[in-house]
Picture 1: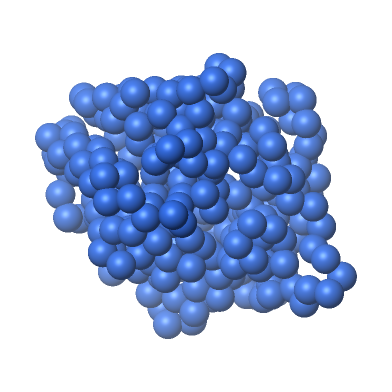
Picture 2: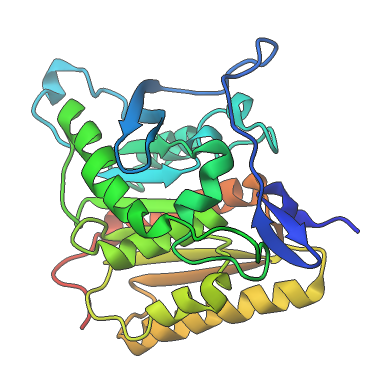
Length: 307
């Protein structure tokens, strides 16, 4: 029986647990699919005791003299190997196409020019770094993960690197974070832990049963809240119908918790694509509408979030 979630996690019986081979450099036979001005940095993390690549996509015209004083909002996307270049996506060999999507939306005047940062995962340590709570369902024997440190890793190590090198607009009104699967978990947790840092969230195919549902409980009650959140889910995340029902039920509970805190269609969007699977292709397909909702010029958030 084919288990679709195994693209990112190893399935035990029905559900997910971690396995992710380290993504090295692209093979020499592969032709890079990156478009635009992409800068790559190596970040040595004191928090996690390792290093990874930070991939910074700059907007068109960033280096033009006319824009020398212009600053830009920033979206941080996890699993950076899979964001811009299919050659680096060593599991699926597919990318999110974030560079093409952002450039197209900016050209169509649907979102403002922005900086997009792909934050690479740490290979076999991916689940350890992303999960704030153990995945008792998919990997009951896993060691206690370190994901409660992930928001600090982003705020104290990744953001200072980017802010120090590039003309960024800072603060929650200008900073978003996003990811998929365990990366969606890490993104949601970071938004809740650092609302003074991340004001926008893109949460794709989150595995919300981690901690036996603790992350869902973390969303109730919401006190200090993100400005705008997009949550995407496929109806065929797994080949097992019971898993799909469980994932949908948990997403709906998070949606209800946000609504109870005062969110409405202006600042929360939950998209369930009945035919979509747990793949980069699905996340790529939903990305343009997610970006348009989060950053759309016609719906730029004003004032304080709901209370």
